[in-house]
Length: 324
Length: 316
Image (cartoon, rainbow over all chains, first blue to last red; front, side, top):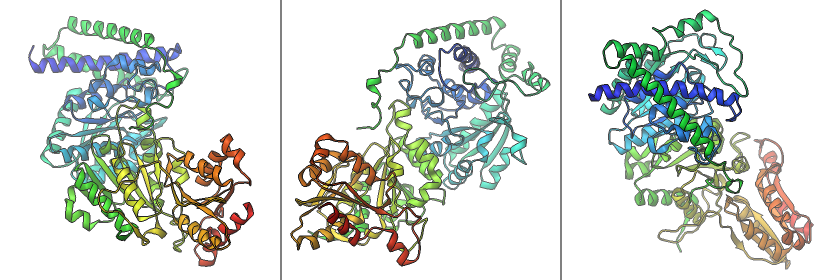
């Protein structure tokens, strides 16, 4: 298998894993095996996987409340992710964070974040660190269309522009900020148009085309490494499911025709990529079935791992508050 | 020993720590020519007026291996960065299970008494104390300012470092060399037998002045400076109160949910200290109003020597 083929298959595997992880998480939440709030990334897999495919393992990212996809795309261990959702001691945060606060600093995943745009300044700090380290590192910052209404979005665009920070702003425009359609909260929905106002590159890309996202990110990484500063990448995608659930998914209020359009085989991120890979002869249908089987087995193992992990000891409540 | 101002002491601390560790970088909206000339504009960053951004940049760079010192200017401006302070900096280590350290220092000036009116005369340390996860430092002398800033920069946690505006030009002795004051250790600025006065920042000096004048009457006042509000050196305060049996707390923040309230609680909920009390604990704090502009109004709002002395006489 050529390296390129290995990389492509890994991208497909990660996209399938992201979708199946979140679909499983919904069932686990309904069954009260996991706790709290859940924000599925279903439908947006091409963005996380496309961006992370163009990053080096040592590059750093920040994520959002809808962060499981970013974790998996950056290479997180699904056992420890699942254990975190279960609130167990073997979770990434020892059960202290949960779904909205998974982080893995060892792989450059600087954390999911419960505050819209809250991760953007932190990513900017990671990009400053990369610039000062001067080893060609970059940072990427995932955020939704809703974050464009926050001051932190504009502040970080400006400050990273004047400092020419090696930072890629990845706007995952899934068309909804919580319950609000993007058209109802913005006069202009071409989010890349913010870029020229700050003197940086702005690119719109089909966010359901994982190869287009990867290539656009790779060009942004090149610009960043050349010292040409940040890029605002507007990835147009669609949130297939709801914003958030607690005990049960909220009722769907969007038009069935709209949902059907985005589910179509030529539009759904995973189906499209499967077709691209089979058409190019990178994989056969049987290979895809094998990937899906493996993902299913890996997820079953993750649930088993999580379920076997103990709950944190209340005696450890104050552990991790302050560093020595 | 040489005498320098608080401002000079803080600048010395910055230079020494930047020389000591090349991972120390700084960000502020105003230029710092002395630092910039010495260390260059890569490490000494002049920022746009974007507090939320550079507060979070400090945090992100700290989580990526650097040791940023971010100066908000007046603490007032930190309020536009509250997401990064409250939701991010104070929680980031614990929430992620302690997998990374965030050695970032946030400096800011604080306090009233300069006729700059309500927004720029605030003393909101207790708002930051309340957020489990931040260390809070408030020195009152040039030596403590230098030593505690050095400790804050070397600390592996987010530290809020308050600089009392009225103390900026005050001079005092500062030891030569690497003068470091540990975080979390109170200091008895004047030993006494009859009453413990815990002062914060400017009011340490005012308490010392009152102690001088009462000494002429044979009243022996102990003046204790916590120096650090998180972690609070509760045992030092309790030990002092057990010796004197009386406690007056002086601060220019309003009393409600204040550092003064916290100190009163720490003292009274300790059984042994409570039993040693001979009089009710007194708080001498600011009036519960936005600090007014006009000098007579501002003076009426803030504590002064007369009110400190009156509180001491009430408990004797």
